[in-house]
Length: 252
Image (cartoon, rainbow, N blue to C red; front, side):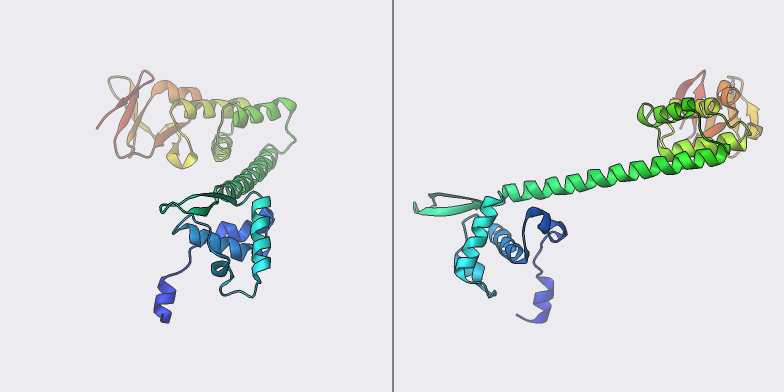
């Protein structure tokens, strides 16, 4: 086999196994045997011979047998005997528990990463708000912030965008920010990148059905939306949309 064939026929082993084999209780020799078992299982679930597992290594048959027993004890490998297609009693292997345990490790790692990131996001947002207000937050404000995140499920970036919008209008208060978030939620703004913020001065006309229209925009919003929040927003869209008496109407 030439070098080109070697390069185009790689042995596919998931990177996660290399990153976490120690957490499965395996050392490097265990890993080599496990990879050979995985490779053999791609062709057949029959238990490969000791000679097959020994090939290319400096391990003795007794050591390989010990490694297989270790894999069984760690609940990563299961062996059972049954008749094959020729009616002969044959030893079969099952690696399902190995995949389940590796999956559990990866899920736990993901959950820990998500939890850490959530804590970091909250810490950064909390510090940003205190800097913006130039004072420590009151118990009521902390409770409101927690409600925005835990109950209302607002994205951290959306809360920050609402704070910035309130600050730009010189109306920096939690009640005002709460009204902004409420309006955005009512109009399905999931993320600040989905909205363009415009001051009320951009209103150019009011149609005969009582709908505000914005210059160079693909959205039409109701009068009370601007009057209530002093803020307007438009979704990024390929179609013009309108709200008439707070009822969403799509227009091609």
